[in-house]
Length: 200
Image 1 (cartoon, rainbow, N blue to C red):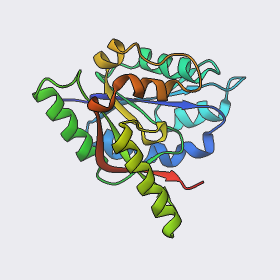
Image 2 (cartoon, rainbow, N blue to C red):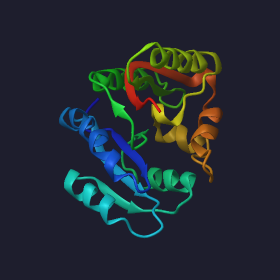
Image 3 (cartoon, helix red, strand yellow):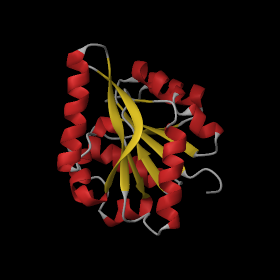
């Protein structure tokens, strides 16, 4: 897999304080030549200087988008230049080793002609200690294995062609869940690498 292939799309809305760790976790992907660009699609009611400043400092592309969540995600996908899209939430924190796992998934998909037949999400890990936190993690994984439906916070890795064939994100707050539903259980892969999420 030559060159940078992933465009990362992050929908933001008054979430500048959550972005720094999320963007820092993407640095290994950029250094490895895996991440081509990061697009912050902001849906604040007024132009968000905070998000724009974060984008400028981190070398991301800032897009002023509508308040509608689905429309923001669709706008990011339309602006993306990489063949693969990775949708992330501002609070999601990719864990060590994610670049190797994603590269392996993409290599296999492209080698076997499955780029338009498979999408992937990350395994959830909750930020916290204790049996309650671990139980929630296990319940989330079991729910995805049973239903084949990843939660938006787990991220979504999908090829542009499959994304377009499925019609992309519809309008509305529940657009990410509806897209995962259209992908279907048989085409969704749960990666071994983790996405650290707030426990609350």
